[in-house]
Image (cartoon, rainbow, N blue to C red; front, side, top):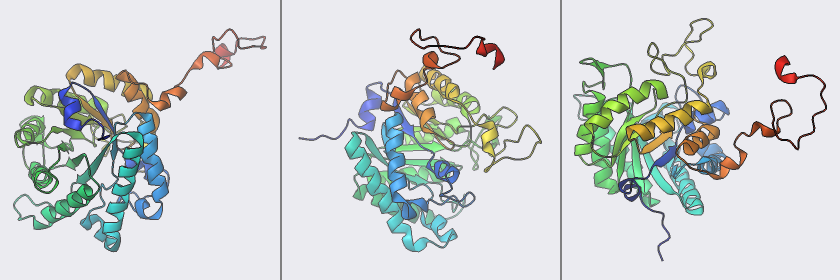
Length: 350
């Protein structure tokens, strides 16, 4: 008897939301297991037990998908840090652990390819295709339920990733673009001159199961673009913002500055502009209003943010057992069973 969980496309066709926790690079960078700059996931090789635990924690917080941590584990990134010799091991370890956690939790498992940093608009891009091909084929060795291709700045590279998934994976493809500050006829666009809404429509027409945006922008500066994508695309769309409070003046997390001195805070000092749980609760509600079914959080994600997102969509994941309840707080609580022995009102003193 087949015990595989309901597939991605089937869930979306039935009108369900799919929550996908991302952001592994910044999780491990914050924990000092990954170097900012190259952002190569060496932690998969050096501390696989931590990666497996993070997979479990994101599922516990409400993720429907275990996304294999193969982002930036492609040949060019591994070459950059002199670790190309462990390329295969890094990918297969991340995929194996993701498959194990997905099987034990009854969730979906997704393979992952990303921008290669090699794409040339007018080039042959053989190295790009080769990079996609090998990562996709490794993902299929571990029976990935679908494959995510993400953080593309060029429509052309995103289309190459989609075609590679269709050819070498033959599973549903989720393709998401990075939304930088490229202007195309007054709209946010790609590096190679497409508006993001037109880019997503072309990807949808070419067979992507889900199209949309991930990374670069926080909820407040991503959602206006998503509204345009919703009006342009007919099928399921995806929004996975970073967990930082981007603004109209500083729309991407790479452009954020420290409010105290105006210095750039990417990547080490982003905490002074971090989003909060309330932001992602409101983000989830807004996604539902717009009609965004595939939702998640990218760089800066934390389990409590994913939990808030899940709760905004009416979910009660296992981690909701520990959602905040101030009724028994010694100062702000209202629980009648709590014995208070203070003779002054502490609320006014805090």
